[in-house]
Amino acid sequence: MYYGFDIGGTKVAFAAYDGALALRQELQVATPTQDYEALLILLTELVRQADVRFGARGSVGVGFPGILNPQDGSIVAANLPAIHGRHLERDLSERLDRPVAVDNDANCFLWSEVQGGAADGARSALGMTIGTGIGGGIYLNGRIHQGRNWLAGEIGHYPLPGTLLLKYPELPRLRCGCGRLLCFETLASGNGLERLYHHFSGERLRGLQVVARFHGKEPHAEAAIDCWLEVLSAGLACALSTLDPDVVVLGGGVSALPVLYEQLPLRLPGHLLSGVALPAIREARFGGAGGVRGAALLNVIH
Image 1 (cartoon, helix red, strand yellow):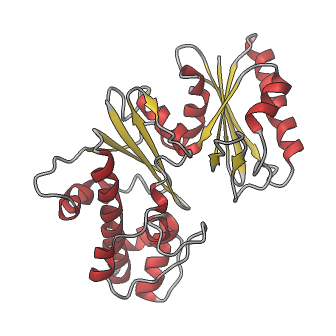
Image 2 (cartoon, rainbow, N blue to C red; image 1 turned 30 degrees about the vertical axis):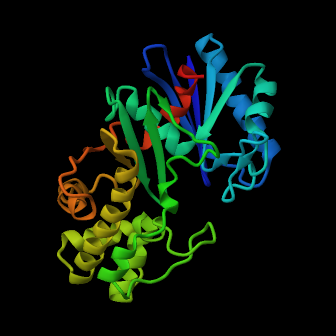
């Protein structure tokens, strides 16, 4: 059995898969965001209950929003105080008396998609999750590539290309949650779409409301989506020029929007060298389950 956890800012998703990778159990519980001990107790109890239910000693993988400090194995997760600075892999492994694999949630998302998903069979792939921020993962040579500082694939913190500011000189110069100005995710994320709509209309709406108005051909929504697609294209082109992957897999809250798959292939060439062959751009096959499924399958490579 493979057990996976996807620890988020509001909920912990748990899922169990059998040896054929068939889903056997899934549930969600509230995240104890401030209490590390409570989180460890929760994770431990869910694993023990699953062991009893399936009569097996399942392997455990955990995805989380952040990176691992390569110096000491502690987690850097500024938006999730319960695990920030903690040694989750070591501590949970000790409680469960078995190895525990941990990785960034976007890496888990991509690892799921290369195992029977939208990137199955690809030699190289880039995963990009479009949600509150922009997450990213890199698959290369049969493995997820974390990099020296566990920063590989953190495309949300690319600086916005200067060509965008030339085309849209009035774009807001926003400060990212990381503290820097003009990170890619400030305008390319779901939150970024909301900011762009406010920029064009003066009105604040949720991302899905902007999408609904776009489908209704409301001019401000059309302007916001048009700019958002250009932002996504420019930032994604930077990643393509660096990684040159076979496949790009999109996930997250707005990744099902058909206009993404219609427009990105049309707009990307304007941000790339002439004659560059584009990768396949695909919607994630496992959708919202990708992170927890990928976490469950981390032990396939550990």
